[in-house]
Image 1 (tube, rainbow, N blue to C red):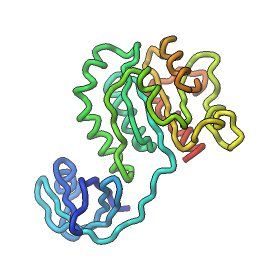
Image 2 (image 1 turned 90 degrees about the horizontal axis):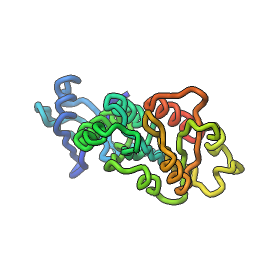
Image 3 (image 1 turned 180 degrees about the horizontal axis):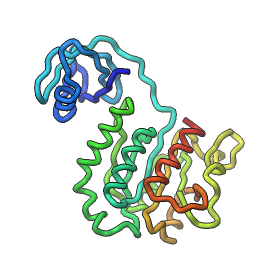
Length: 247
């Protein structure tokens, strides 16, 4: 299966790869003129042939336009800031699992030092998303939004969508009960099952005020079981369940 890379755009039957991606392709993958790769600008997908290889720049000639398959789901991940290695692992796997948008959350129980450091990590996070999207052969890189308070993020997104808040409270419904699997599911009555927001809290859990704000914005509390999961484990478990049911 051919590797896929992201470019800024296509013009006059040509495209160019620059920066770290070009360096990886030239030095690590030993790119040579004549080799074929897939290129995406987030909208179009082309089979392209390498014409020229330099250390930090690779020029392509476009060979054939390829079929574009748009994702069936538009999933927004509202992810609370946790320890950076765990947060970065989580957004990498979330990209592989098909999320469309990621909103980092400065939850009340997120560590203050981590929240303060988060804006300086945005460029690194963007690079992680890009590399993960290329590896998983996605059409486009997920959108990384600026860090937000939970209350503000809960209100974001179009109204007609399914909204799920992971919860460890005893009254939370099982995840399988809130994911719509057919038109008769109660959760589907006023929600579009192709547009989903899922919110995942910090290690200390959500506060009462955050639970209240989520409920006011239409979020359904859902549980992944009796065991308490790390944030990054909850990300992969929840997204896997969503993709299995609806993807």
